[in-house]
Image (cartoon, rainbow, N blue to C red; front, side):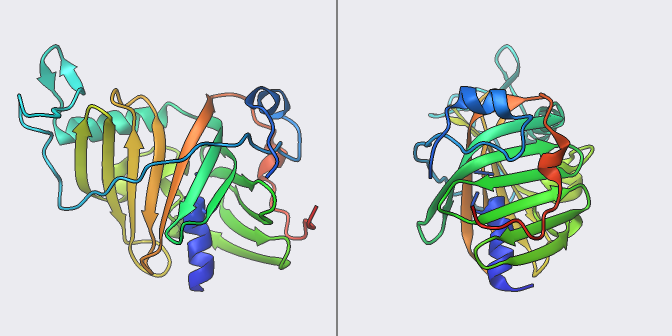
Length: 254
């Protein structure tokens, strides 16, 4: 797979769109069942957080910055419990529409709207002036550049999109969990996926402190290119027009 296309998929995960002209979130909500998808509202910046090492224990009891995640009153969750709670949060969302901001390792920023319908379906709709779009119809991920008139299809199973699209999400089963960190600002889980095209992708998922929802993710692709996608104005478990997920190999530049 060409490095540029691999980065395109990671950009979706980025891809450059998990995520121009703006439409208010309320307008997007009303038009989510209409094709083509509406353009996103302008989004703020995002923060990048570095994680390293193997599975990391939650901060020691009483230590400064001790995590707020608790299993019961005064009882902190273990790494395994945190991962299980993250799985539950991801599995609770069968469909989603959200604005996204994507920032690459080169500092380039893209915005757009992300649509997800589990299992298997996804669309990154980039805001202008970008002509990139990434669509999955349930089996194939199509990376489409309307300006260059290129369409590159790939199996979902060989892209880092799996953690969003599986029928039953299990982070520890689908990848190797390398780090679990909890602090007052939230929870982050780092995984490595060796099944992606081109080699191993390193993915870090960022959740709210209560682990009720995914806020952003960062992907380091096999070539070492880093992409971070932040989500906002998230609408969960609503009906999305299935035509949004149709593969269109010939959609022209608007």
